[in-house]
Length: 508
Image (cartoon, rainbow, N blue to C red):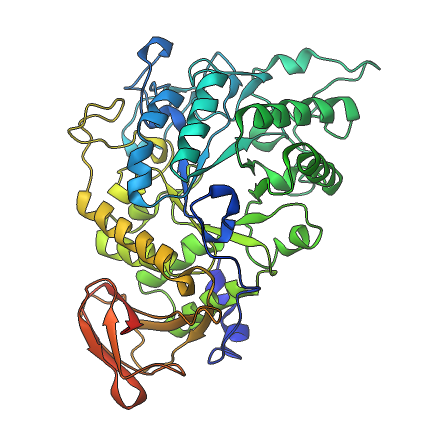
């Protein structure tokens, strides 16, 4: 399929030279997590089992050589490593579902090209729920979850809990349940999700009949009660498109009534972008949604596919998001091949995408270990262990990590926090003749903050020569390198190194 940024190019180019506001001006970030807008957050996604083992006593059936098995990470281990995230600049943490998982794994076959033997796929990821009202002891206890949330809040970090409403685990006992009127809890047959996204079994998982009030109330009450007791700040909503609007309307009503108006809802609508998420925003079902278009568009551009002006127009099109709602953009996830692998391990091109992610509108999402160049590419190795190098942290002790990459991420995140223009400024595409380079400006009208982003995807140096945006002074500095950059005669002329990015701001 043609990349989305190419399909949007014609529409985007019609107004490429103008400014587009990013919506209403949001309050400046404050130390108190509850008072910060989610548009200002940097979200970090952790598969708890793969991150850090803080309690070896709960390591039931751990199989660290099995890429689909349990590896022993838990809530205590994650809590012990929160300073790692705080130091990176993370302000929000998303963790996988924690409820009791099915006890038996499923046979699975990894892609033959990986050279892996057949393995057992266990429920370490949290999405094969056996009981919505219990936490799986392999993750820890409810007290451990509360301790994690409290410790995160003490560091200014919000917590999003992943929740599942659509289905249970493959081997769930819910298949044997009946309602008070005798109806089965699980829908018969698998259906076709391309024909009817609601009346189908996603991935063959048992589909709950949530249209029945008794069943709907059970899953809603279980998740809302856990959120209330633990103090989490919001939900990441799994398989959003596989439940009807009536369910999400009731969900919004109940979470607001029972958890407060500020309780955040982030929708996983597969294939979502600013356009097709808008109906859910218009109905105020959720506060944010994943932008599935960002990852592939950036990977395509840094590898030389498509014109830079078209990619710039795509970035500008993301500003069409409905005011007051947020797009969450990512480079890697547990459900897709990792970006660094897709780029053939080219860390310089990956760093280009990381920089563009942190310089773009929306809530950037970091998939655990991405910031230290975690290995792995396609499933199941996109869910491997967090690399800890020489640190005595299991299960990823001894796994190589790239500290220079982490330092680069830390610098980017720090600049995003320091510059309102990068978080919520408007977007202006700066036209220039060298197609290998991309140039755009972000400006926050409320603060006057102004940043120009220059990126070179080529393996050769590129000379950028663009008209400076209105109000740009004659002298600037490179926020990444620190050097002064002269911008006389209303032009920005900069020689970009191969596969590099520069963020320019006016000198104070």
